[in-house]
Image (cartoon, rainbow over all chains, first blue to last red; front, side, top):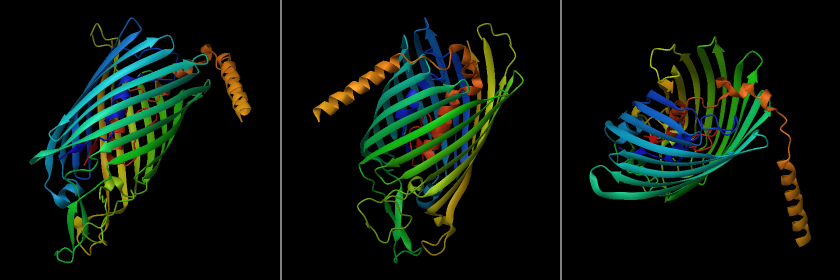
Length: 381
Length: 75
């Protein structure tokens, strides 16, 4: 079963750019290594694996980074059990990046490669950022290009390309000694085979005992999306921070979405940092989405991907970071261990649980809870 | 029309030139709060990238995740 690499272009600069871009004068990020274990569990899907990230700078002017990431997927999602059999697969992604700092300008190039048994994605990216106005402002601009190949297990002749382009623009601004804000805009354009070669749509079929049948989904060959976000972070008088985030999204498939997130960060003593966050997300359905089409081949384009339906999700997150005491490794300046737990609830407005049975189109609406765990060690050297 | 464009371009140039001389209203010695780790939006890039990966995989929207994004969409 394929894992769609929808937005690999975004991941590359995410790991290559400085972690605190915009907050201070132009400096390259610290030498650092992270070893993370991640786990997602929800809706019949379990995904876990490691992610290793290493950064090293040279002469305060050059920096390189490398990331190795694995997803081990075990899926019996509602999509899968409705029309196919549970499966297991593995995705491996490697990415590298390099930064050059020239005065107040930082240049970043990055490349990523992702492989699984039926999908390959390669992405190259270039980003520039510039500090202005006494380093109170940072402007950034980036472009990524991705080349994917979609394959289909059991059909050796099936191979379809997808080309992806991403343009991004951002600005962060220090407004007061305690407040900083940021805005970002991102345009993503895809062209090629954008649907899932395994997924089906369902339609009313009086000849079927269940009253419905399935046929392969058909998506448009292009998709362009716009996303705009605004962020703020404020330093409270008693050394804690509050943050807010809003994102607006739309695309040429008719999906409109809003995201709101608030967070609170609270240090305890010199060794602990505790975090609490809440996030709400809501979207409308794609124009060609339907849970139940009236007949076979009802439209030119047809989709029943629940990620393209009308739904909302809520997330509550808790996190703790502990500064470890020195434990005798000479090259390690400091180290931390962190644990983050996030709980999601997804509620779908027009995606029904066909496994529940009943009259087609009147089955209960689908929903599920999911848990995300991130446990990682960070060392600065 | 051409005159208006020239005036607009001149005004823009003047504004930008003016900006180049903007005196930072938050002095360097007033920025210690931004050096505190709790003010870093993505203090741990590897962890932030993973959570954004989950968002991208489970939601129809993509991009502009507060400066970072990423991920695959697992079925």
